[in-house]
Amino acid sequence: MSTFGFIGTGNMGGALARAAAKILPKGSILLTNRTMAKAEALAEEIGAAACGAADIAADADFIFLGVKPQQLADCFAKIKDSLAGRSPAPVLVSMAAGTSIEKIKALAGGDYPVIRIMPNTPVAIGEGIVLCCAGEDVEPAQLKEVTDALAPAGMLCPMDEAHLDAATSVSGCGPAFADLFAEALADGAVACGIPRKDAQKLAAQMLLGSAKLMLESGKSPAELKDAVCSPGGTTIEGVRALENAGFRAAVIEAVIAAWEANAKFK
Image 1 (cartoon, rainbow, N blue to C red):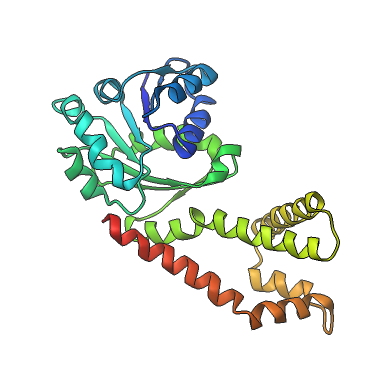
Image 2: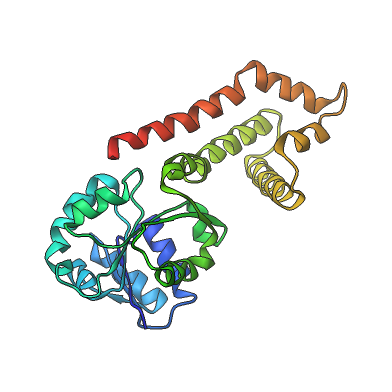
């Protein structure tokens, strides 16, 4: 039985540990966090064990690094000695944005097999996207173990490393952009007299339904938009107002800005 260790049980690490716990056998998950009480609470919730980062580095077959890119060097400084000399080498599964497989190996101080994953916040409810990129030295069976364990988190999307950062700017940063849009829609409805609670529910369900329609119909966003815009109708007037305000250009620039920000972690 393979052991899965999670170093960092914040929003992303904790959500993925919960997802994995739905599939993995009891006793196969180890958790640690800078605030150990957080790891201990999650361990009790999902039937895992809380321990130190060095213990995970020494014992886990798959080590999930749920720390921010700027914290990776400190993280590896604490676990390098425990990693060194292990045979077979553990698989390092990094969630650090913008940090290449080669840099992760360099920080780890060894030629470890590395998988990069980039989850988004909806993994917490099993409706997320997990982008996944495996290094050349990762065995197919190892990659399958990771993707199988994360299946309850949502959609697993293989991605070559050259495109991982750009894809993350849509799937990883996109929830914040969508939340801003939903908030603005709700604000508009409130301005028109709708109670805040109802306005937020309308915006959220509209986004959910529109996303499902796009995925299930196979139609492009442009086709679906045109289907709503009747000649001389209300929707086309709203679209005109968005275009006048530079809506599409602003969204494009947001994605590019997020993509370019990855450069500081390389």
